[in-house]
Image 1 (tube, helix red, strand yellow):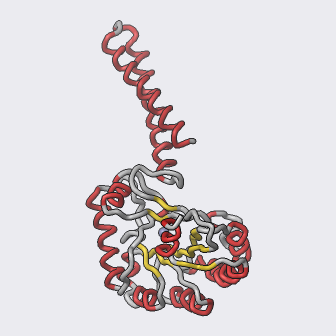
Image 2 (cartoon, protein in one colour; image 1 turned 120 degrees about the horizontal axis):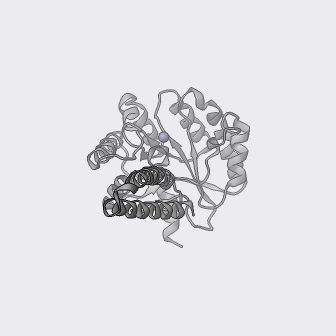
Image 3 (spheres, protein in one colour; image 1 turned 120 degrees about the vertical axis):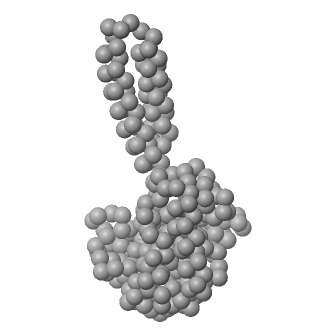
Length: 272
Ligand SMILES: [Zn+2]
């Protein structure tokens, strides 16, 4: 709703701005100072509304300007996707891979191109274990206000590294911080690539993020068929998440869910 209301308000303010400007040059000289003040105020309010609007829209989980976006898949089958963002980092990758292997579960890793290049053994390790690699840009910069050439470079450099790691499947994309506006969705749309988001994000709650039991409980309480779980398991600050993974897997399996990769999950949409 806010994505519609704010642009509308901004449009009204812009209209007012135009009208004031027109009056300024048509009206009597004595009222010009007053009109200039009005112009400044309306201009500032408009800028603020447009900024808030773009910010909210760039994070929207409901819509984007171009291309397909997926936050979860509509299915009645008890399938869910476990996705890990950022990295890969040496050490933490092995720890996560060992957990997944012990539980016999496949996951999707949205990796950063630069991290792949800096840790060349980790990408092939993830691929060899049968997991999926997704593209999370090369530098993990915010993809707002970026040029087309930057988007192309960020994505294509990372694709090349993912291929070099031996991954052969479809490479899905997830924007850093979940943010995008015009150029990135346009690029993805013209390259027929889906933007993959998530609908379960335990680490986004400050009272949950540092506690592995709470992370596990949050995921298990919110699981539904077709869910996409977002976790960050790389780095020292993410120890609680790494500890939560076995409990998440065991709990979900006990609820009758099966873990699939993002590509496999998307297949369930087509059969609806
Ligand atoms: Zn990220």
